[in-house]
Image 1 (tube, rainbow, N blue to C red):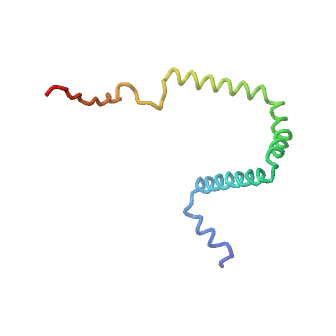
Image 2 (cartoon, helix red, strand yellow):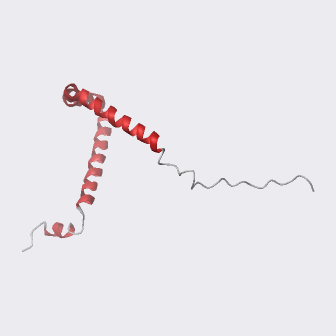
Image 3 (cartoon, rainbow, N blue to C red):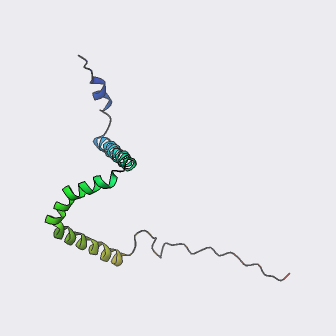
Length: 110
């Protein structure tokens, strides 16, 4: 017996869960951007941010502010020292880097 949404179940069989999660994430981010733009056009963006900060973020920072600061400092120092010790990952090592190509200079004598 076919139901109203049976075609939906068949179409989701080949889709991975991570792909659905990624689509949901991008959809929620885009909706947040649209809502932020709407609040900006209405002139309410700063008041909404202030209300969210005062009601949600400020109590968390008052209770757990020291722990958050220590964790950020430890991980930041670990990242900084690890990067100094190992060198930058983004550049090629000196041994595999090709020397620059030099153009031959023409002599002015004829």
